[in-house]
Image (tube, rainbow, N blue to C red; front, top):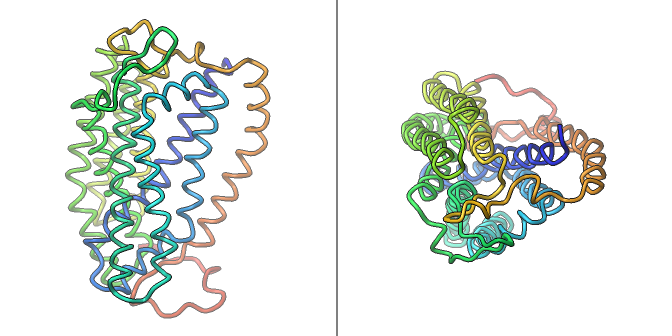
Length: 348
C-alpha cells in the first residue's frame, strides 16, 4: 500500500474514532434537557461522561494534525473554504468544554440550569456543523486550479449537506441514549432505554437517507460506482436497524451496533470520496486527489514510524481508562466504597 493511501485510511480511522467516542458524548449532552427529572439525575448524566469526554476530543486533534501533516493542500483548502463553519464548531466546542468546568462552580439552580443548557447547545451544534462540513468534501465546493476555495459560506449548504448534519445529530442522539443504558441505574436507566427506543426510528430513517444520498452524490459528483461504497453503507444500515430492534432488550448489543453504525457511516463517506480528498464543483478537474494533496514521501515515512509506535499505546491507554471508569452512575446508586471502581459492573 502506498503511504498516501495508508494516511488517507488513517485520517478516516481518526475521524471514525472521534465520531465513535465523542458521538455518545454529544448524544448524552443532547438528552440533558429532556431525560433527567432532577438535579441528581442531571449530575449523574454529566458523571457518565465526565472522566472521558476530554480524552475523546483528542481524536479530533489527532485527525486535524494528521491531515495537516500528511495532506497539507487538503488541510489548507478545508480551512480556507470551511473557515466560518470550523469557527462555529470551535465556538460550540468551547461552550461545551466550559459547561463541564463551570457548572460545578455554583450550586444555585439557575446557574446549573444555564450551563446544562449550554452543554446541550454545544452538543447539538457541533455535530450538525461537522456533518455539513464533511459532506461538502463529497458534494463539491468551488476550487480554482491552485486548490483555493473561491465560493462563500452559503455554498456549503445543499439538501445533501444539510441532511448529513441532521442525520449525524439523530445518530449521535441514539448512540448517546444507548450509552446511557449501560452507564446508569434505576429510573434514569429505564428512561434512557425508552429514549433509545424512541430515537431509533429517526436514526434509522435519517441514517438510511444519508447513506443512500452519499452513494448517489458519489456517483453524480465524484465519478464513482456503487461499489465499494455500498459495502460500508450496508454494514451501517444493518447495524443501526439492529440497534433499533435491540434498544430495549439488549442494551450492550444496541450500543455496540450504534458504534459499528457510526464507524461505517464515516467509512461510507471516505470510500465514496477516494481517490479524491476534496471534490471541486462545478470544475471537477480542480478536485484535490490523495496523491496530489499528499506530503513528500520522507514526511510520510517519518509519520508512519511515529504512528506505529504511538498509536497502539494511545489505544491501550484509552481502553484502560474506560475500564477504570466503567462503574454505573445514577441518583439511586449508593455511595461507592474506595475500591468500587475496581469491581466489575453487572450486565444489563
